[in-house]
Image (cartoon, rainbow, N blue to C red; front, side, top):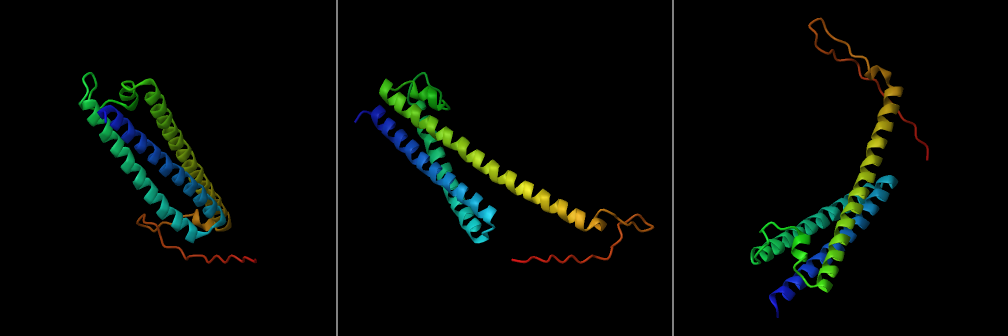
Length: 168
């Protein structure tokens, strides 16, 4: 088998596997968001563990692809050892180049989708935190006032009790 054809097959396999892992990661991120909204903390923990696994798998495929690209570039004149994906793909035939470039673009697109899912969850958590903090500041205004001793240290104030009556 031609070394270039073998490399194309390895790179294509790497990209396809990376896309599968990213798709699973995104679906796990969506499930985690739903679990946070529903306050299902067991599901949040399970999805967090899955996310960690998917992230590690994807990082593994990313590092393998970088090693593949650098080894290919090092063995071909005119390419530097740290050549980027599109520089390497220009050395392939039209059909192989188009197929690999499409897979690489899909990989990058899924990374952007994953980042936006992560940002959405982060915004939800930050907003919920601000809402709860604002409610507590309104309910317990004494937290805003600080009392200082004669020496300038913050004095310990008697803690106020807060009881929340929640009916289901």
